[in-house]
Amino acid sequence: MHIDPNNKDAIYEQIVFNIKKEITKGILDAGDKILSVREMSKQLGVNPNTVAKAYKELEHQNVITTIKGRGSFVKNNDGQDEEIDIQTQKN
Image (cartoon, rainbow, N blue to C red; front, side, top):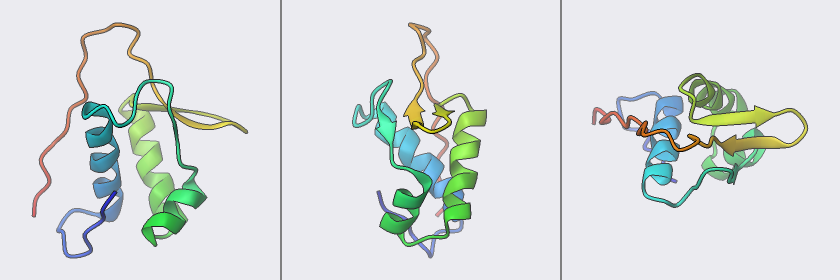
């Protein structure tokens, strides 16, 4: 995952976009565990609060689910034809 500090989009929005892109490309599948907030913030070199905000937004958009003590997982659409809406980033 790549975060561009020169991008006009907020860092948390870039994280949301990248995770959704990985899901649509099949890199992440339903049920896959995503990195913890701490692991993701360390990997990207960003504040953990920023990653937490991105994960909260992904939960709000029904893309991931978080299970206390277990982690965050890509949500299963249960056969629904809903596609993940990837909005184009403003560069």
